[in-house]
Length: 280
Image (tube, rainbow, N blue to C red; front, side):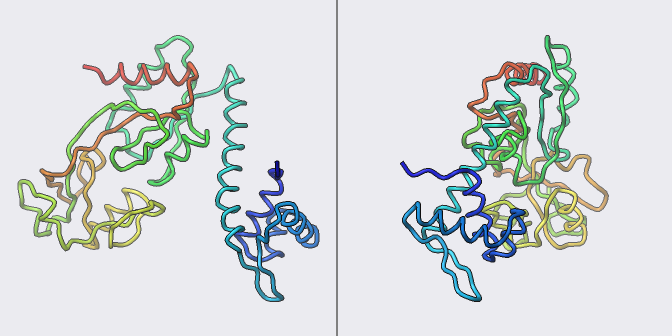
């Protein structure tokens, strides 16, 4: 069986990212000749060429592309395994909750209060992230639980419970053609400019790139775009903007999610507390 050490995978990935031996060596804090020697040794062991070298250029072969992609996943998995092992053995570990700013539908205080009353409740650290990486926090162990929005967030590999369902609204500037409508349909939005979410694969908006709701609302105010969002993300409605219900948009669900392989009692206790907090 052919094996590579994690450090060797780091060498390959650094060179594949930089495509320059000097920059890759500096990133790895090793000498350039040592990196060149290590790459030749790895290629010899694998029996394939990973990089195309010339005096002015470093390129990736198909084998190099494959090893970069799968090697990055392997390194992430090793890092996640180490973090999870340390946390599983730490009886005083805090519980980490990830969400986007304002992305709790007003439920977070009640959830935290309910959890605080449970036996063996831990300190809860709240982590804020952008629109694209909350699921990564859960998959790689940086967070234990997260508040996500379905169907927008990718729940693959995550267990989840729905905490709240709500309608979706289109946010427009007060002078917009739709601002006086009591409600609209998705077909009424044809031809409008929608946001492009930074770092979100498959984001099909044609408007300026935005990283969060605050940026998006500012761009709507200056008539650069409109957006369709869960109602709770824009209430109370900022001055100069109008929210109009979209009658045929699928409802949005706020879900509490966690890694489906994480069966630790501290996670189960928090999930139970969250469900208890939102049950009438």
